[in-house]
Length: 162
Image (cartoon, rainbow, N blue to C red; front, side, top):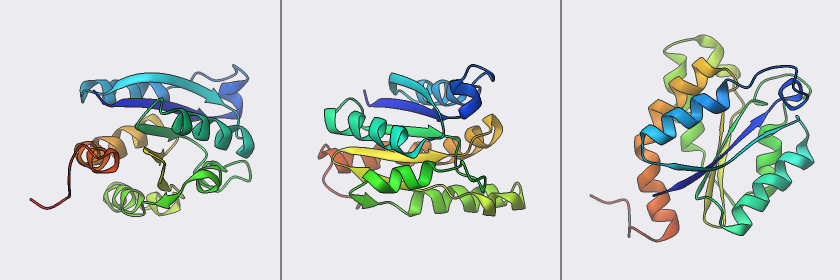
């Protein structure tokens, strides 16, 4: 079973002023698809805290997949992509490109997403949008392909050829 860690980036959620609905939406989708949720965090929109937590999870081998939600917009406090870029070894541009392309069929505002994805050691990190609706749409669109990508990354599978 592949392990996933969920990180919600939200100042108001961290302070307990707003209920996190996106993290639970992620949990529901990944568990339905055979993943084990091994950690869930709600952190403030703080670049250092976010990057340190993602690095800690990846470096300890806690999870093969980290899914973040929130912090991918245009607000000055939206820094999740930068926190992710700070700690990844390799970028995986196809995942956020696919999410944006699919989401553009639903709303033109999808072009405003700054989501990124990358690999640190043997952990894939993907930034999802902040709204539960956008999380559901994006994650359900990419979830089938993630398993194979993780198997290639961890050495469980040999290549992407059929």
